[in-house]
Each structure stands twice: as structure tokens, then as C-alpha cells.
Length: 271
Image: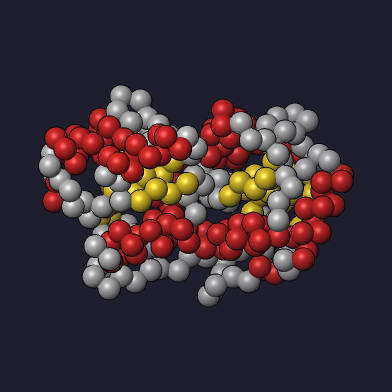
């Protein structure tokens, strides 16, 4: 589907993957309330994959636990399929365990909503989806967006791709990627003045995001480069330690376009 101008919610086509008939009705009614007109529903991951061979929806919404697989397995399979990998994926689940949710956050979903969710949460998630599939470039007062240079550091390839796509959608194309904090430090050390912004994950092997920030701020004595951390971390003590390390802003995974825009304005234009 091609778009001109900002997409209206009524134009979205949605594939809903939900094994519970009751939950299916509840979620469908919420979507209809928001103005969604085209909803296809299936009850399993295999049915979803089969339907995706016939058409590509604008958004996939799935429950976490399906009869034949988890949503994490479903999104991983979708992201590994060339013609499907760009389709936004949203999770609606009562699951709250970090160990269960973190892998799907790392896969680059556009939103994770709880069960039950409120209408406002759904509205925001649908708007984020529209920002994702029909982006509008941002305009800074002090930067030309096409000249902004970003170093993205994340050990998850899928998460990096998601972050890069969101940044690309905003008009940022000068992006260098690093697979962990150590590689990020090496790249930054070689060309300190080559970047206007660093976007980093927190939990990484070799060197985590906090250690990366501390190295840049303390060892390299660089206090001016804006560093935005994207993390699924929920531990308040760890988040406090990250802030004390010198991070410019903390953004939750999923990496929401509107939140990122607001943070970029704050760390770049207000700097």
C-alpha cells in the first residue's frame, strides 16, 4: 500500500492473531472504536504465516502465547522473511515477566500493550504505527536533518535495524552501527568529531551501555556528545545509575517514533 500524506487510521489494514474468541472480540471492538475498518483475524501463528503469503497488512497485532508458537517466534520468523520484515508488529499480552518480554522488545516491535489495555494506549500505539509506515521528517533549528550523524550501538541485529529504520524515517541517513559497547567505543575513539549523537542499548556483552557512557564521559573526557539510551531495563536503581553516568536521555523499547522525536529535539536542538 502506498501513501501520500499522513495516513488516517481508517486506512490501516490489520492482521490480528488471537486464539481466544472473547479476546478477539474485545480487541476488534477497540480497533473499530478507533476507526479501523479492515481487520483480518486468525487464531495461530501458522495461520498468520499462511495469510501473509497472500497479502501484506499494514500492521500485525498478536497475543504472546499462540497454540503453535509464541509471538516472539512469530515475529522472528516474519522479520527473517524478506518481503515481510518491514511490517510493523504489535504485542497485546498480560505477560509481565522481563525474561519473556525482553526478547520481543529486542525484535523491534512498535508497541507492547497490556491485557487489559485502555483505549488511550491503543490510540497511541496506532499513531506510532502510522509514524512508522508513513513517516514525516523532522526539522531542527540548529541542525540540517540530512547532515546529522548518528552512531547506533546495540547487540541485537533486529533491534539495530528497527532503530535505524525509525531514524531513517525521520530523515537521518548518516548512521554507523556497532554490535556492542566495545566496538562502539572503538569507532567513536577513531573519529570523535564524526558524530552528532550516539544511540545505545543498555544490556550488551563485552561492554554495556552504562560502561560505554562512562568511558566516553570519563576516559575520553567528552561531556558534550548527546547520548540517548534505548533500553527495556525496568530496574529503578540501574536506571538511576545510567542517569548518573551522563546519559542525555533514556527511551524505552519499543523505540516509539514520537517519543524519539521529542528526545532528539531536546538533546540536539536545545543543546
